[in-house]
Length: 54
Image (cartoon, rainbow, N blue to C red; front, side, top):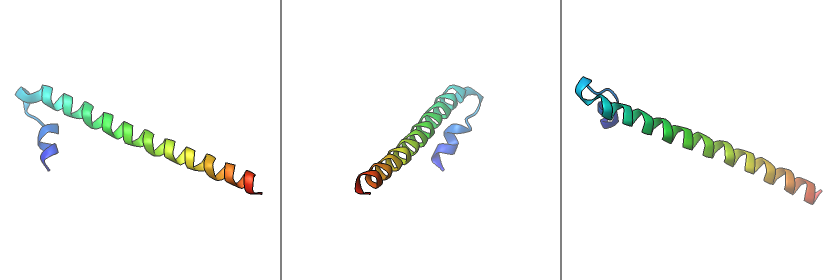
């Protein structure tokens, strides 16, 4: 993978590796947050529909 080359950089390219790790962490955190919010909203929707329809 191309990304692994940047994540495991040599000593002289260490700063790029740090930036790559922060980017990867930010993307993973954003995706996890989006999945959790969508699950909660779906649960609220189903609860609301079940209360309205009976």
